[in-house]
Image (cartoon, rainbow, N blue to C red; front, side, top):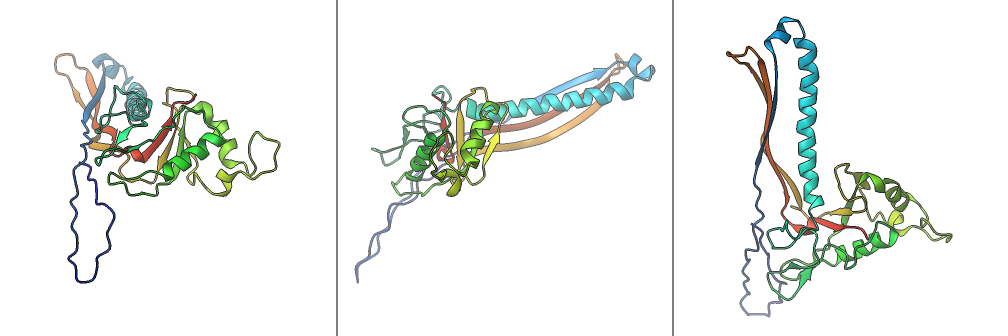
Length: 256
């Protein structure tokens, strides 16, 4: 449950009573834990023919890779679906939207550019400026700051030139690179290989309770023998969920 907080603190005149304000409920961010399970079996004959050790080792590694792939895919889906209105947040709009409503009404927070933009020096500067202007549900400036850039694998070279060049990338000017000099993205960039849009990018901000991952039951493995077939069965199981509680924890652009 998101809470709105209070309005600006007023001046109390001498001899007058103090004023009180009421915090309000905003919206509910709901997480539904999914059960992820997969298994395999080794036949009784394979055990008898001394193939158990080699097969179980290879199959176990393959099982772990399958479980990890599913978790990475589901985690990346939060960003892959972040521009899709069919995957709304608790406030009724997509995670990255220009119309996140405020409880007080009349104002909106936007965590995406007005015109979708590719990753470059200008789009990052505009994003940092836009992030700095975010307000809370009562209209108070929250002074948000960028922390980390999230990109697909295809943008790694663009991100390196944009964030790490001491001078402005792609120009003949001798101007400094303000993004690098000011440390605008202090934690650099992170490549997520499970991002499906090759030109989309996101910025993680310092707003708490943004993107979240809950572990309901950690990964567990188990095995047993089947009496009827003689096979040895293995399984891996875990329960978790991914999502976002506060949309201001992230800024995103789907690319031009």
